[in-house]
Length: 364
Image 1 (tube, rainbow, N blue to C red):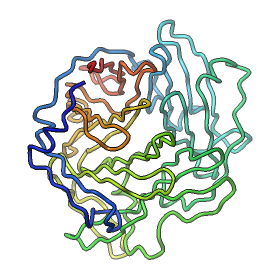
Image 2 (image 1 turned 60 degrees about the vertical axis):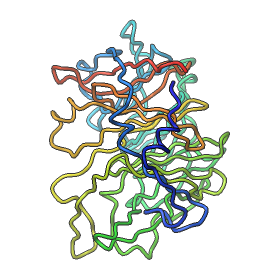
Image 3 (image 1 turned 30 degrees about the vertical axis):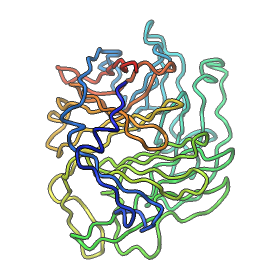
């Protein structure tokens, strides 16, 4: 892996120590603009098809675990939300998280996967499960879902929660957006934490606008490194926050200057005007590195998106940019192999069928 910090400094990146966009103004927050050169000069990597998903008609998202295990999230039409399959044999290893209102059942599942851990969010029932894939594979049919965490959150303001200590969750506030062009000033906080059984409000009652539909993204936590990262799915924005305080300390804007246009309704709800930027699609990590998948194009159609290249930006947990790669296929949900040598991402093949691509990470 090439270390590219010198490129960032030599190509006109600048440091700001005052206001940093969506986060509240603070002298302790550093702001950096990523030059578009990290896209133009990205190292081109080859890719192979790791899995063909065309026979899985209900699959919504898919991840690879330990190179041979396919973990799939299904759409609500299916009777269950999670399937785990052996890639080599095609055998169904586990089928679980049934749809319903009964014990260990969910009404609507949002699922995030990193380093063998599934976070399953059922906002409708205010229940959240943390599932270790190793435990599922060990016990198979005898595996029992763990006791859920219960967190009464304002469901209109968050879609994403991550484990935060033994019995707590950290919630992404989707009602954060600052855009002076439209006089939108929903300044945060980006994250709100709650313990099991808490009743919390994520969005601020002082927010003038409802920006939920235009302010989505992903978060990833590392207690070991005292860091939480956020990437925006529709803006050129990355943020680093401290795990222990949830306070921001580093913000990246870019690469590129593309900005969304918004429509504001009389009731204060904000929506995209015509189209939107497809920015950071997902994030995954090893113990030392953080990988972001980035598109950087305005949405035209699913067909166009399926043929778009993916740029993978590599940082460490302190927010130092290390390298950038280009892969000539669309990779949406990233996961990384246990040995840190490969990245996997769901996308489409030349026939328009769902697939998972495998990319070898260059050695240092």
